[in-house]
Length: 200
Image (cartoon, rainbow, N blue to C red):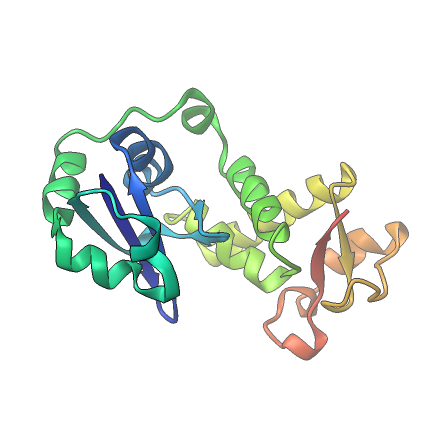
């Protein structure tokens, strides 16, 4: 059995008692491809995340209670992180067809939907996600990519754009969207004035 820790300061999460298939499909494959993935109710960015993998016996439920799971795993299992990562570097998995053929915009679209499922997402954060999806681009490229992904989701009515994080925050009207998305202020990091995407 495998036990996993993901850490991106100040956040961390753990998964216990994973078999080899779940470890690969849920963690290792997306980690190796550099794709954003979800675990423990949070989206993880491989480039910013420290991965630790332990291999050992299955941990019973009582060994996981009261936040003791990871300490118990470290005592009873062997750290195989280096070996696992070496295997991935030697032969990275072939991306799934959808991932291989997906454009950067589609990657950002999927990421926006995943993040919005966990709470409102600011446009400034979307710009950051575009940088991760297209690391070789420029800040202008990332802005165009972010604008395209947001416009697509708004047109498909999968998200709404609001002037705040609260569910009842005023929504940006359809007739305003195009103009608002072209302003520099909309994509700024000032949280007090930020615009947020909400699930539709």
